[in-house]
Image 1 (cartoon, rainbow, N blue to C red):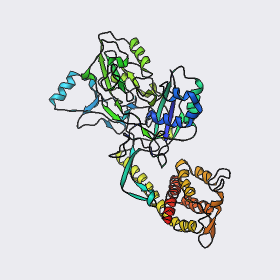
Image 2: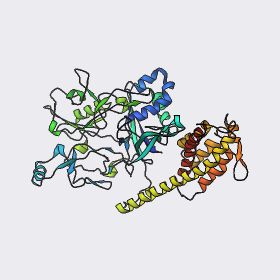
Image 3: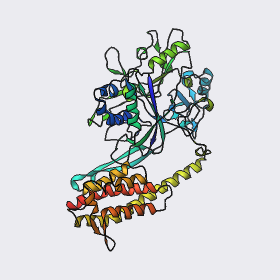
Image 4: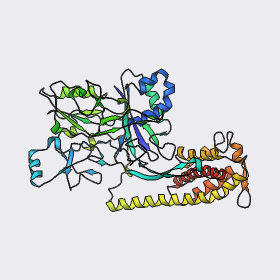
Length: 522
């Protein structure tokens, strides 16, 4: 088996819905599913691969793994095992540090601690969220929630009645990692094509990609994120590194009951329900290419621990052979990142998790010394978060005010020069420029580059050259964007946030002008 490893940086907030329904409450997954990267790769490669496309995207010979967070020091993280519990009323972590003395692995709970819990009337509480690293840190991916409203295009772009909805999204700026596994028969050329497709320029994943969500930057990683070998020999404990979708071997129907045969175990293996900790969920993926839902999937959730007891003697060698056999995944939908498991990982071998020394681990990304700040107090972190939110709110307020003033001159200007002025489609392209950009330079190039700029090339060039009356004189729509819009936004005093303000202004112009022009026609 061959593998490629990648780092992912979210350039924008990313919407990864827990369920594809458009009604009811909306919540986000805490990771990036492998299906997102499969889809982004298929957009760029499906036609190019021709008859090989089925082998790459459907056969399971190529398996796109889920992306999990990288901690603040550059180390990979894994989903919290569901066998980890802590006493209700206490804490499992402090800041980003896992309180290992408070966290018990109930697979190995000692009779002494169990008796003490019963005597003190302590209730164990399952850890169900977050990711941990071998260094003893815990990572809770941050998310945001935004309310939006659907637009009624039949009424001039006005808001639809009773169509308020919201998106929870993973926050921009976070770092993630994932791997793609290949069967040995997959040609090296295919590996190169997939790597190039994912790393050449920004890609977009998740929901609402046509709006201000979903842009990510992917780079190849030289080091594999982890290579965990079996570390315990008193049973077979399967840790679900991702969701797994199982089928009943007799009927072929989906099942949520793990069987020894699912994991290549001998018939004498028996499921140990007392030592098994699983959660399940069902969901129906939406295929954006076909604009339709796939079949419902019933899965055992990542982080689940499935225990088997066997009468056969267990040693390191057969356990490692079992891990090698399961490295290619189990169950269905392996191409989408499902089915990855670990056999007897070391972090499940003791009652309390024992962090490994950092000298024994490899960082996925190199964190420069000046980037490693001292741990802030809760108050300092809160003040920094509030300050950042205030800046973003100020940018949003200023951008709305500026665009509102410009609309007062742009809309009449287009109306007077209606036949030759930029129309709704040309103004709408400003929105695409803002979405695809990552810097002020990107926006300037997309608008004014002599060979491919929106305002300086192509069939719309003459429309943007059209002049209208502004500030006691005449100015072209292109010069208005360059000398008024861009200059005003760049001159605002927001150190470190100049691009954010300009991007928001361009996005709002591209969103509001077509709506205003539609209202003029209505």
